[in-house]
Length: 215
Image 1 (spheres, rainbow, N blue to C red):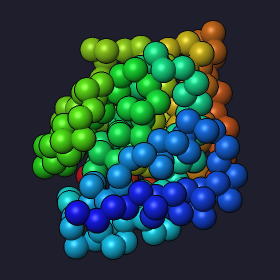
Image 2 (cartoon, one colour; image 1 turned 45 degrees about the vertical axis):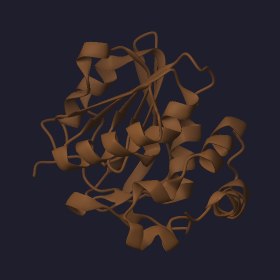
Image 3 (tube, one colour; image 1 turned 120 degrees about the horizontal axis):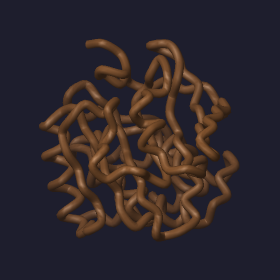
Image 4 (cartoon, rainbow, N blue to C red; image 1 turned 60 degrees about the vertical axis):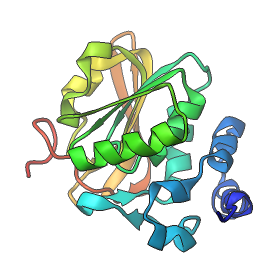
């Protein structure tokens, strides 16, 4: 089996660190997690390149830099934090989050993606991840509140259930905007007050659901 460890180190240095990612824990997680395991074998030779790649159900595995940027913006400083991920997709971002937090709860719309992500993450021996198939715009109320929420699909506005499920002093990173162009937005909840700051332009697949885009 090919060893991709050197490719991961080059990816992190040439695509992530040079663009300003400084959080050492994020950098270490990006070096550790094998991105190639989350895509099909025919794409392995592209696994550590500087662009997103297709997955099943017309979804994508995000560009490595975007994964690192969203994770750094989330500000996971303590290993005891509980994170909600909306849009499991391939499971790659899920694994990065699992390296940095005590527990990850992830919601995926497509059951095919849920099953495949579970299989990969189990094979990689992650024990602190729970995944279900559901409408991600509704969050996962059973385990709320969450210290941090990350949304890996775009919405026209921040879904109210996600705001409700965010712990006070919690952070949420979410692409907000039009169908084909969004702003990567950091949402903070402090003493019940919600603020949102845009960090950069981005393009994500749409988040379909009751509080997102309609299919």
